[in-house]
Image (cartoon, one colour):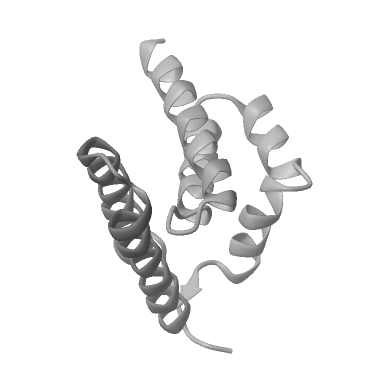
Amino acid sequence: MYQKKIYILTGSICIILGTIGIFIPGLPTTPFLLLAAWFYARSSQKLYHKLISSKVLGEYIRDYNRKKGLTLRRKIAAIAIMWTMITVSSVFFIKNIAGIYTVVSLGIIGSIVMGAIIKTVKEE
């Protein structure tokens, strides 16, 4: 019972982070939404279907599901763009150390998810 609630909470946090990632360069969107879908699929079919049916957020998940992963080239490009934006934000825009640590920590999580968890598929 507690596990279900923890999964729903974690999935909801991932949705918030993924949504923020749409607007803030450097914060990944797709990995957080895929994690949210994973957590919801294991805790609440209602929330899972609501997420994948979403006109905005569901598109990211449906695109991933069609291809069953990302090509190595897309993974490298996504991680490179993410870290470029993290670096630019940390050097030029974020003025406090806590903000820099937060952005870098989220970048590390996004890189791990993108590089190690999301399946690599061959180019078409």
